[in-house]
Structure formats: C-alpha cells, structure tokens
Length: 281
Image 1 (cartoon, helix red, strand yellow):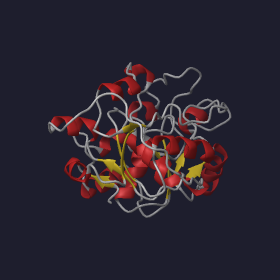
Image 2: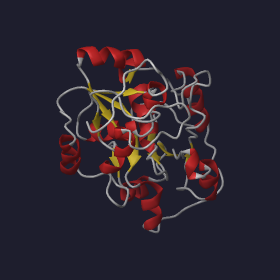
Image 3: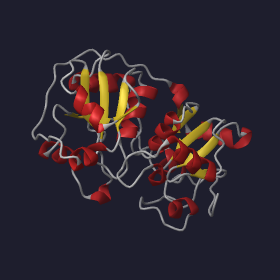
C-alpha cells in the first residue's frame, strides 16, 4: 500500500478484512466545528473516529503534545487498529490533520501500513461516493507501540541546532504569521519565527481540490522557499499539526530525514528566553 492512496483505490479495497478506515479530522477552535459530531453525521463507510483532541499528553501545558506510547497503543486497540492492519486515514479539516495522524502512527509509534486518502472526505463526497452516519465499533486488536524519539525534537534540541545548524527548520504557518505581521491568536505568544527558518505554508502543498500536488510541483514549492532537500529537516508550525503536512509531503518526495518539533511556536513563542526573528526568511 502506498503512503498516499486515491479515492478510487479505497473504493476498490473496501471490505478487505485487514483494512481499517479512520476519520482523523480535527479543527482549530476558530473553525467552530465539532469533529466527532461531523463524523457521526456522515463518514466513509466503516470508518472509526480517531479523536486527535484526546491523543495528547494531558500533563503538558503545551497544545497538542504527543501522548505516551502506552496511551496511544491503548487508543488504537480500542479502535480496532492492530499490528497487521492496513490503516487509511482521511480528514475533512482545513489544516489537513490526517497528516498529523500519519506522523503519529507511522513515524513515531511504529505502525507499518499507514496511508493518507488523497483529497480526504471532500473528494470522496464530490465524487458521489457512499456516506454513512452513526458510529462504528470494531473488535479490539493488539497494537504494539514504540516511540521513535529520533523523529521528534524538543526546544533544547532546536536551541542546540541554532548553534550547529545541522538541520534546516521549515515552518508550515502562513506567511503573515511567519513574518510577524499577523499577531498570534494564543495569549502570551510572541510573533515571528525561529531564526534561520524557511517558510513553506502548508496550503502551498495542495491543489485546489485538496489533493497533494505532484512530485514536481512539491519539489518546486520547497526549492522556491530555499529548502535544500538533501539536508535533514525539522518541521515546525503553530502547535505541531500542519508541520506534519510538510513532513508527509517530504515523505512523498522520498525525503525521510525529517523530524517534528512537537512544541512548535506554541512553546517557542511563549518562552521569553528563546530567540525570535521577524520578516522574510
């Protein structure tokens, strides 16, 4: 199974005993949407609801911090996602949260067969494909989780990188937030970006229909932003969500020397001691 699958592929594979379809939608507060309610109102047949809002570390003061491996495994088991499952993730979110779910499952917690549905629920609906309502419950399965710390970076790691410069920082936020022209909506956050970062707004990775751009176009997006695709990359954003779309796009290009700064600007911008820059990259 490829990491990015089409709606046609999914329609053909539906009903396979090892296939698990997962709604990984999550919305920012200003979207005024309830992801679970939307799922129950209409989802791809057989899909279960991941609930990314709950897959966090409750002890962390930082938004969307990754949960422990134990908590993650327990949730996957409850959903019926097991070690042998082929997992297809989709979303109906403006911030493309299936990429966050992919990063958690595939890159951090050790699932082997994970894909993102290209175009998500919107494309599925636009093609007139079947939708069902209500909830689905699958039989619990064993999920073995292990945490790959090599795929994650802490604030201290990023501070150290500012000194040695081995990894490039790629910020997925929109240009006005990156430059500091737009004030952050979270109270107490400074504006701007981590010094030395390149700006690749996550929206630039997608076509108008919500599908990922092809490899040639994706390569151009990164190169035009000054990203050297042959060097290691730390992906960052506001709170670790849209950075995963950058990581997934790089994965599609065969570039897997990518890690996630999970705290992202929510952590960096709230610390008065961290260096900050404004303006263009």
